[in-house]
Image (cartoon, rainbow, N blue to C red; front, side, top):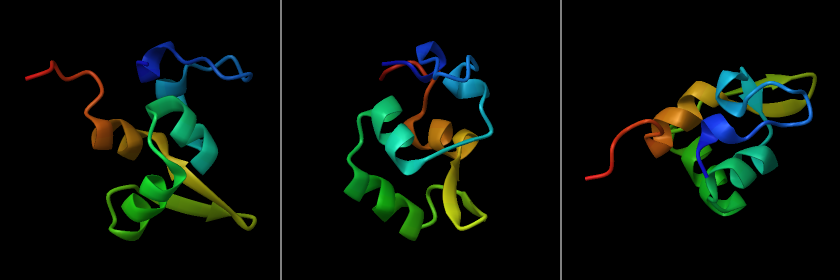
Length: 72
């Protein structure tokens, strides 16, 4: 599934969002929650904590999966 085509209930295309939850990141990419946690731990995914909630910055998620790049 392409990140640009996923439109959450907010009406904002996923790729245009500033952040998402870990579960939304799993849904949008097909990665497991465990993989998302590993990528946060190794610094591959940028996150911010806001009011006790850990949010993933969508641009780092797009970079991680290489969305928009042509397959090799």
